[in-house]
Length: 173
Image (cartoon, rainbow, N blue to C red; front, side):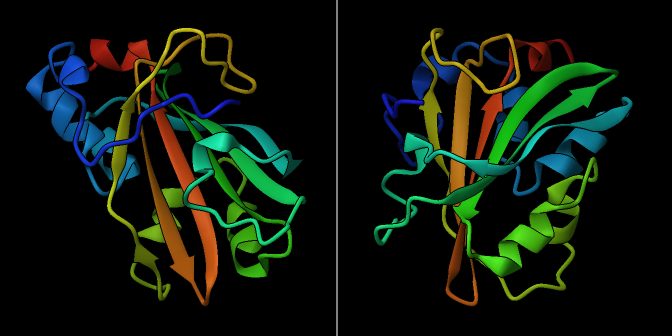
């Protein structure tokens, strides 16, 4: 994926004008898992990929490669009533043992572990971007209208997380 998105500290105005206030609030929630579960629909996670992956340019100015050319990624769809509403990618260096172990959680939401208070994590501020319709999402034949990203640090290992909001979300909020 090319990083042709412009990341900014707030939701772009074009996105804000295309969604409800409730959707905008959900897109800014600390934990999407918690926010999506609050909708009172059948929440599920569909695992698309777990393993070695080429570097995703959406992380180009947040994950420092240090010459690393081996990366590990987890791609999932977050679904409500079986409808995909968020496509998410978590990425770390292949030798980031803490993160690799945490990412191997099957169809359990990563957010359950990230936000249960048991890990000594720090998280960057969110950055948001409008998404071009031609952006491809691995394992998903559809488009996104907006994205957010953040970076987690755990014992000097960095995990990048991008979450792409899909059109199906608008029918729930």
